[in-house]
Amino acid sequence: AQSVTQLGSHVSVSEGALVLLRCNYSSSVPPYLFWYVQYPNQGLQLLLKYTSAATLVKGINGFEAEFKKSETSFHLTKPSAHMSDAAEYFCAVIPRDDKIIFGKGTRLHILP
Amino acid sequence: NAGVTQTPKFQVLKTGQSMTLQCAQDMNHEYMSWYRQDPGMGLRLIHYSVGAGITDQGEVPNGYNVSRSTTEDFPLRLLSAAPSQTSVYFCASSYGDWWGYTFGSGTRLTVV
Image (cartoon, rainbow over all chains, first blue to last red):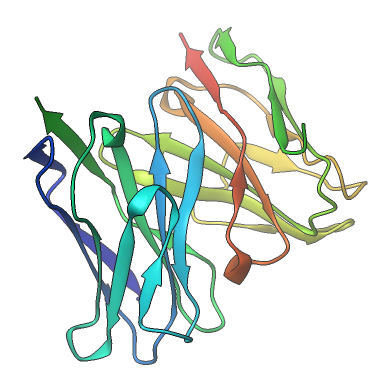
């Protein structure tokens, strides 16, 4: 079965430091890949998506992600963390001919 | 404002009661889905629809019914509430899975 794995259920970074949230997927062919963000007491919001165009995808709020087929990864990064980035982040994958699958989420904590 | 509207935001039910969670979208999206979110479990798909009159089961459909009589509305019915259905429920809509979903703000349901 297809799956998506987010390494680390909680990640803490200092304000101004690099944010790196890891996502690996299992798929025999390059799928569609997404990152969503969920702020407290809100629904999920689409950050960015990869749909087989450029491997480096830029999203909202300064986030970007790079699709690496050889590593089956789609890690999310931001050069400089801001307090407002504190939220839960979900990686999601759509295997070909199947429904979207969400990872279990990574809660990002920003330390002052 | 365009988006996905869920009602109610909060609900407490007694075991065995039934209720309907409402979901409406005004973006003319064909795809609509219901998810439940539980701590450490990510989002799990309950039911989905790819157009009016078409519904299908997701990963965890037991105890829930849906119908899609219009493009705009996709209600979720709990037939006989159980404590295991205590969760946060999200409705989402899209032009298609690959497009990325717009989520509602959620319904927090407690079954006692």
